[in-house]
Each structure stands twice: as C-alpha cells, then as structure tokens.
Image (tube, rainbow, N blue to C red):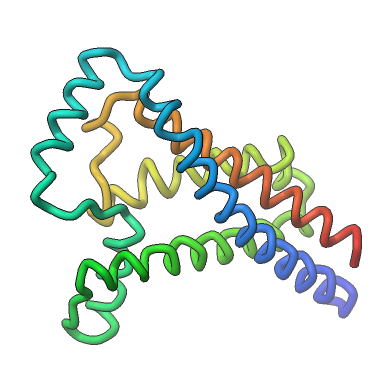
Length: 181
C-alpha cells in the first residue's frame, strides 16, 4: 500500500471514529426524546398492553439494557469471574455503547475511503446494515436481548430509526472532518 493511501485510510478511520462517537451521543438523544413516543404510536393496543404487562412483571428486577449486560459479560470474562453490581453496570453500559459506536464508526470511515458504496444514502444504508447485523442478529445471539421474533414488529421501528440517525450522523461528521483535513 502506498504511503498516500495509508495516510488517507488512517485519516478516514480517525474521522469515522469521531463520527461514531458523535453519532452514539445523537443516537442516545434520539432514543430518549423520540424513541419511546415513536414505539408507543406504532404499537397496536394489544401489543401495547402486552408490553406494559411484561414490564410490570419485571418491576422487582432492575432494568438492564444490552450494553449493561455486555459490560457484565466483558468484565466477567476478562477477570475470570468477577461480577459487576447494578450500579457498576449502569456506569459501564455507556462505555460499551460509545466504544462500540467509535469502533464501528472507524470501520465505516476506513471503508468509505476505499469505496463510495459505503456511504450510500448518506450513511443510512450503513446504519440499516448495522441495525440488522447488531440488533436483529448479534445482540440476541449473545443473549443480550430477546429475539426480534419475540417482539412486535413495531417495537423494531425505533431502534431502526435510531440506527439510521447513527449512520447519517457518522457520515456527516466524517465528511466534515475529511473536508477540513
């Protein structure tokens, strides 16, 4: 690989990491401000009631998302058996989220330097692919969340929209940094 190509790849990767970090934050804001309302508006009355009853059954257990469970699994595996308290999982969950977002953004930035197909749809195609591979396949495969088949289809609308936002934001920041560099 020529020096100029390596340099372009490194710059693209770093711009992608910055984009992935920014996009992870924007994704969190989207989920907390729009996500719940979007899901509620799309669920049928029956699905909404079922989801509400399911949440009531779990009120004794502290709520944990996939990133908190992933943090627990990582620490447990690395330390040879140490478990995190619920408070530690709450603190470690965002670290997992932002680390994953930065790494995926870095891959996106590197790929965008190699092929214009990567940034198709201003990053939204990448966001959709990330949603399909991570949320629909990876997260359930690792036992971090229920399978999509166990949830109403409308419950997937918000995570899909959040990943489209992630993809677009990653690409926007990546392009801005690359244009400035």
